[in-house]
Length: 282
Length: 287
Image (cartoon, rainbow over all chains, first blue to last red; front, side, top):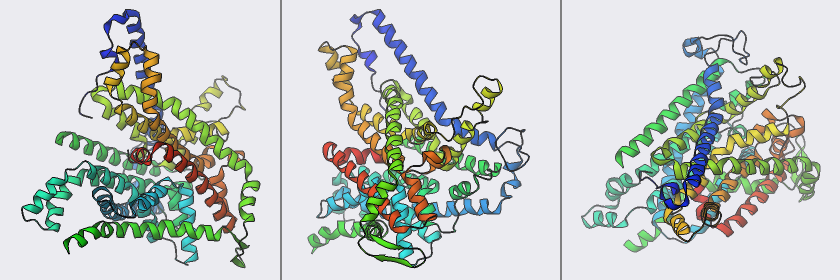
């Protein structure tokens, strides 16, 4: 990302004539505009969410613009106790699932990246199937599973499900990082008298940390936004996306937009900050 | 002693995560297969009777939904490729120092809840919504014209929701194209079009394939887009599975539908991966 790729236009031999060059310039400009048009299209619903968090609707229907207010960004944000608790649940689940998936996934990623062992291709296959399986199947099979075990669905089942679908993503990111490492650094640590735990803590972990953090961010993003699997495994437990879904037919209050905007800003800042931090270090 | 220990290390590392996947992924899927051939109902309970008819029923009763899933997801993928390729191309070759910024902007929607984003689209597309409302009050389009609750709205939602998953893998593939290969093509007197079709396009195909995979699977099985943006005539197979589980509570039929869906998609993916190698697909999934 740090190096600039020389553009094919710049490297084109100059003999091909001015008209061709001009046509290329125009093509480039059209692509540039097209890219921006698509970015705006992608951002449109976000803009609506943020805009309508400042709307002042008369009832619960927050469809049409009826005036500017900042009151939903104040104490009125917590007017709907179910929404507040759903948001709390989403954060709790995301934090716990991220921790769990990051620990389990990092270990799996280390094993897959550093070692060659029997059964490796089988484990790759299971992970691959886990990532590739449609969410509605993951959800409905887990729901069937908990039903058969007569295990009451709730926060625990949601966390179990979230860790399940996040582990493979963390493992892949960590493995990719492990593969780029020089094994001789670890050997040097061992030669200098570090035990296995010291080697891991002082040498391996700092080296794979970017992969681990990237995996954790991915897991958090997947968990906090998950809808389909969560709906199948939650029973009466409510998370933020589930609450939105359940009230969407009666109309979403502006508080829902405020919560959505807060998640958006926090997520965008975290990702942006991480990207900047990475660039600084590189 | 030491060598035995180190030979076991990968297994120790794999154990907790592997166990988790076995208990909460593999076991439920196997159980699902078991349930799929049961008969009975929610009141008197379900018993295993090896009733494979469930699978046939699943396909014959819901042929329309299966067809629509394939159609919407397939069309969604094609539109997505058409939109993504130029953008990925432009960012990869002309993005310069701002590549990271463009990719970040493309990923921005992911920080807003998927459900909220889709509902937000339904506001846009509603009969008297942000787009059609003004147009109708100006009499530019007939009052009966609608977008929401139609097939194109569902396809639009699919394209919108999964577009970044198409742009990213194509970008990754294009980014990897060695500029020297393009130069070599030019030196050998290939024109712009020829360089593109003979050098750039073939090298970027793995990215396109990975993008199709990342788009098609969630799109074909999703029920959120179809229920928010589609009408009663636009339901997909995900909606049927949802209804069979939550409303009808016909668990065997739901299980047979789920397993059929997973089997079709996974077989497709494995054929795909055989041709292209799992590495690329996995790498794209991680990207």
